[in-house]
Amino acid sequence: MTMVDVLSTAAVEVARRIRARVLVFLTEPPKETEEELLSGTDLTLVVVGPVFDVKNPRLMRLSIPPNLDLESTLNLVSAFLMEQQLVKEGESFVYVASDALGVKTVKKNLFAMNGFFSQAQSVVQRLLEIAIELSIEGREGHPIGTLFVVGDVKNVIKHSHSMLPNPFRGHKINVLDRNSKEIIKEFAQLDGAFIISSRGRIVSAGVYLEVDPRGLNLRLPPGLGTRHIAAAGITKLTKATAISLSESGTIRIFKNGMMLLEYNPRMKY
Image 1: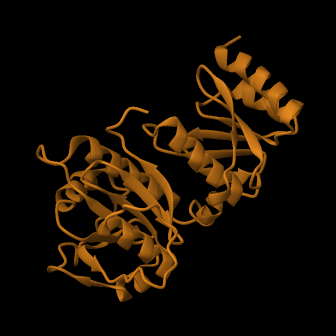
Image 2: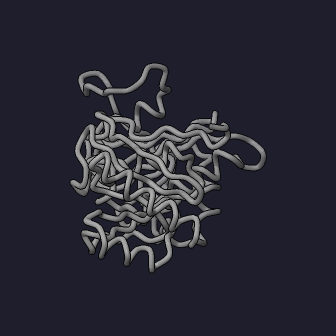
């Protein structure tokens, strides 16, 4: 019996005691374990790994960058569970890692994540991975800040203007193409934001977002800079998702005018 099997057995008992309906695996369990849990329990299983698949309502697969810290990962899992209506605010789920299990209670402010995973999930994940690399490595030895705005391109453009000739005009460069990573990192040194379609095509870079936070009722923590306020604002004005990276290395994701995730890969949690 593997450690995951032992933890799975214990997790089922914990779920029964706290009346949890969802069991989340933060590491891929053996197929036999999945089958046993599906046939022997009423739990919904969610497996975090490289694949995103929600076709099976009893066994869902969620793709999250593996280099996120545990708290950020669990917050994204919580958002996914709420979006799929598997848990409600204040309810808990049980999770199993490679060498531990735990219980996570869904926080009140995660309601703003509605629509996050249904919109360009793989594109957002890819950009989050790139943002993490830029946070850790910088560019040519120097820290950089940048901003990615994903989806609802037509309306995002209405609230922006170009700061320089569009370097991506006439080019079909997609963030899901592995060969695009170095291109994105190079142009991340430009001031302004990237505008990216829901399918991953880079529409433009070096774009200034015309966002006036007054009157938008943005619910943000104090002390955020103009880049992060612009990121929050554009997601309030449109249906886009924004990922911002500060020169300090902090990555933030915004949706519906609210901050969904805050993570600094340079810091030890």
